[in-house]
Image (cartoon, rainbow, N blue to C red; front, side, top):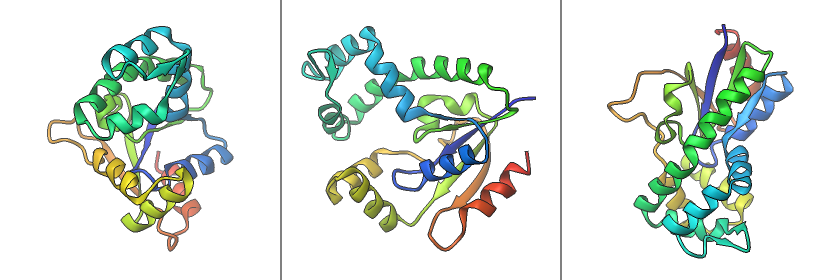
Length: 193
């Protein structure tokens, strides 16, 4: 029986680090961010909708202006919902195809927006990566060359907890606080499935 596990957590929590460890251990991991970008870049209909529904200058000469879109959607929750709606359907279809191609019975999907995307309806459990807020802010500022204010806006725009009406998922916490080693936590969790 195949199991699909969501790796979640707020921006800067360390989802990508956990994903890299899983890949090193031989597990397939679908990265929603990079796949969504690739799907957006390849899909003319998505680009058209970005122009029509987000901003006329969201795509220039066929190239998506991600900084412009980010500046818009992280200031406007309604536009963020529109962006997510445009991209989620394509990502869900891509994940289903990807899972069917994997030989492993245990696969993972890295996502920052488990509930907003509806992926909570297709995964078997959630592994949430947690880190102290200040650590997340510092990591994201360094990694993305963003100001504290920009990082705080992105954090405020993310919903990590399940909404009250969401289907219940088995939740496991991975602490990425530079005090608890990641590998033993990951190995323990993979052994429980």
